[in-house]
Image: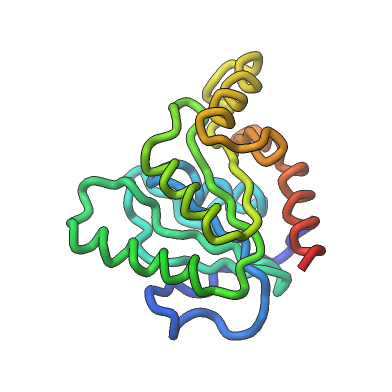
Length: 195
């Protein structure tokens, strides 16, 4: 899929602010600093469409990125960031849950986990929640360029086992080298076509 004019559209906290219409939404979930913004930028060949930050926990709202009026990438707030106050964590968690539970436009949920680390309890809880919604999902192991090429497949297999995910639903990815970028676009296209 060739996206010619991707653009950031809106940041929201409440259902009343969601974009109107029936455009499908591809949702990105993952802990703070897992590379969701880098994923959006590299998938769209843009350097700074989504703002990346070295400070985890910057995204506190749901960010909607319009992909040529075909679909939205929706970047959820990252979880597991300890410096956010408990009250703020609860507020962010509630807005994320409300969105995932009630939004009819969700077409595919992508959970990003860092290939270098064993999935955290938060990753497992998020995946369990995603599974409970009954929506189509895949898992992407980000930052694959940070480990030796020869180890990528075994790391992915270990994460699939840990998360209890079929290996055809998990893909290694690197925003730097664009590893599996075309494959992931194919998965997204198939998902959009099945709507």
